[in-house]
Amino acid sequence: MSWWEYVQKITGAASQPAIAERVGIAQSSVNRWKTVIPKSENVIAFAKAYNRPPLEALLAAGLVSEEDIELTQVPRDYAEMTAEELVTEMGRIAAEMRRRIEED
Image 1 (cartoon, rainbow, N blue to C red):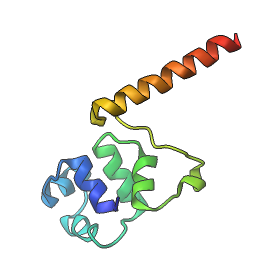
Image 2: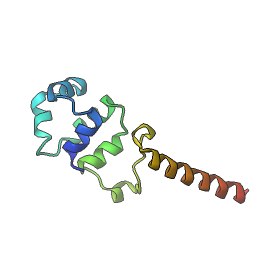
Image 3: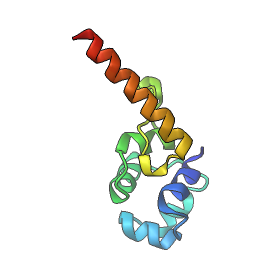
């Protein structure tokens, strides 16, 4: 997923002026996001404005890699998951709980 695709997903395809106003930057900066990776401070401002983890946004912008932050998976918002993904996640959590109980 490109940075611009990430922005569109997080904002619900909001207009550039609306994104710029919410983030507190110039609309021209948002317009450049379609083709140019933004400055890290704008990525972080975007994440904060839309209540997203800054590391998630930096990763989406390509400013850090999973190896850079030793991240294997970006935590997802359960509200964005499909029913099948939720069932899979519940199974993963249940398996982790069983493992921890068996350790004790």
